[in-house]
Image 1 (tube, rainbow, N blue to C red):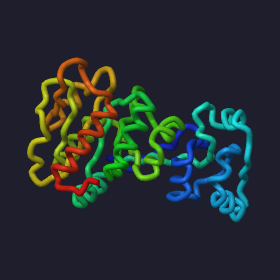
Image 2: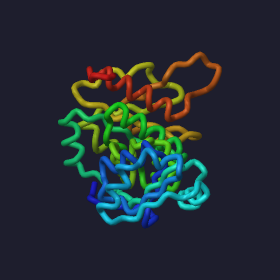
Image 3: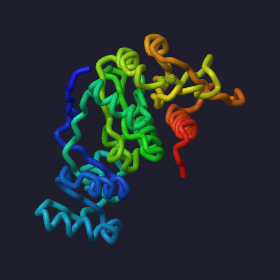
Length: 256
């Protein structure tokens, strides 16, 4: 595993919604470039405006139509901040060893293709304190977009998205440090099983195709959530939330 760094295709990233915008100011204000908001939101962002003025950065109260143009969406939530896009790096084996020693849970996504699902998964990861999410460099795999940031509700300021060339190879490489569980729609065990002293890495599959055969063979165990049979499976973001909860409980983590 090398130390490759990937940069998002756009030179700028637009983050919408008051929660997500405030999260960005709190966690990484250095990345902020411009701020726009409508009249309804203006009463809630006086502190942000003062900071922008102090830093001599552009901020303006504009009509909602202008926010739609800037954000490219009607779902701007009355406020838009333009920031520098993050770099997405490739983790090293030393990174993995360090995370394992810290007892950190990992979340691995096998070609999750919907940017909204990606955002919902990241929001759940942030809620449960999971700070590392790994995606493959694959044509089907979604990378974070403006919509992802909006759905994540600030979660992307607390979860680092990393990228690897081949997910199955990465899974095999981390197994000395992690107990790797793949979420399968059928054929898996009903619980996480024994992690034998290692923290857990959860693997979630593509919305339509599930886990690839290569990824399945690399996992140590498959887990299948049991329903009543009226629908085949849960949305992948709901599955992520349940498994993150179960992982936290299995390791005795305090979950509030």
